[in-house]
Length: 218
Image 1: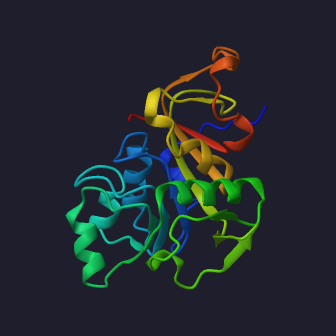
Image 2 (image 1 turned 90 degrees about the horizontal axis):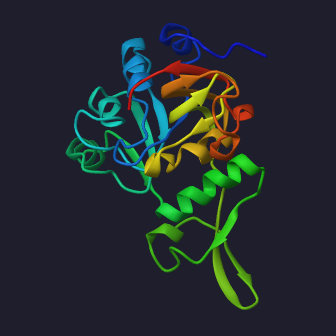
Image 3 (image 1 turned 180 degrees about the horizontal axis):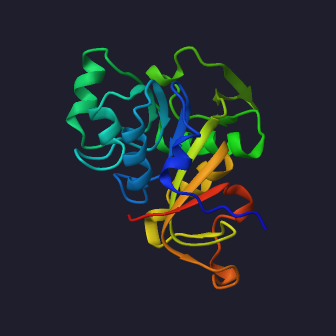
């Protein structure tokens, strides 16, 4: 079995300017603080970040925003982060707002090899601008295209050394979907156990999707 355990310095060798990075979490819940801190220490920039939101000042993705490492955001909302709003209003940061369910489905499509998803959400609003409208059985839908990333940063409650993940409660949020939709997946966890110690009935993300593991805190 491949040894997936690496330290932060080795993980950061995988990053370069301009990458598309998916980051799990909801207002910081289920986000890998350790990996975000390592990204800031590495001084990489011009990221496209795909996430649910940008959390709150001092938490999660907000730290990347505050240090101006992000060129573009694809999110369902900016979270409770006034700095994101300021940069967006001043055109220092490109922000694509996507309805939350649509965001999840676009990531799911990216991980499942699908060509897109049809949804009525956004019809007749700014969201439909520039998008293809497809009629099915007399009803119109927007064609929402898949999202794919270079690297996914996910955070589990428990992970075994093969990369099988368990998420406590709502920390699962976008983590599982993002693990399927990126070329490389780096996971942190509150607890790392030996293979076989994690009950297979609790595995939520299969280790086949996880390339590297770090020990982290939530």
